[in-house]
Amino acid sequence: MSNIEKKAASVGNIIGFVVGIGLAFVAAYIFSIEPSKEYGWFAGIWHGIWFIPNYIISLFSDNYYFKAPMHTTAYNVFWYINAIWASIFYLNLILKIIGNIRTLSK
Image (tube, rainbow, N blue to C red):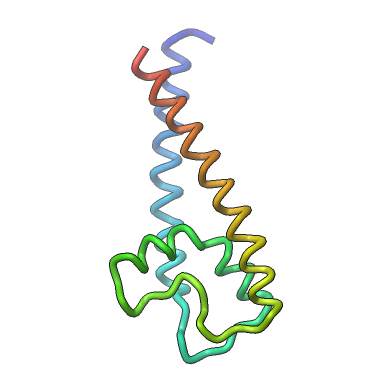
């Protein structure tokens, strides 16, 4: 693979990352947590997957939650499992993007 092809692939990866993160924030915002509703195990999976975008949005809004205040024990278990998995996934994405940015700077 030539240097130009590597740079083109890196630009494509960066664009995909930005679009993907944007879609993650849109999905997290559309499916926001209602504080008066009790959530079960399936919602724990969903809310755990969107933990990072929900957390970032909650930093800027007082009435936005990254974890449901009313939930079952199963929600709690699945939320933590998926929040840890999602955090590792996002960290891996960020490290790959850093590698792509380094490729572009060469």
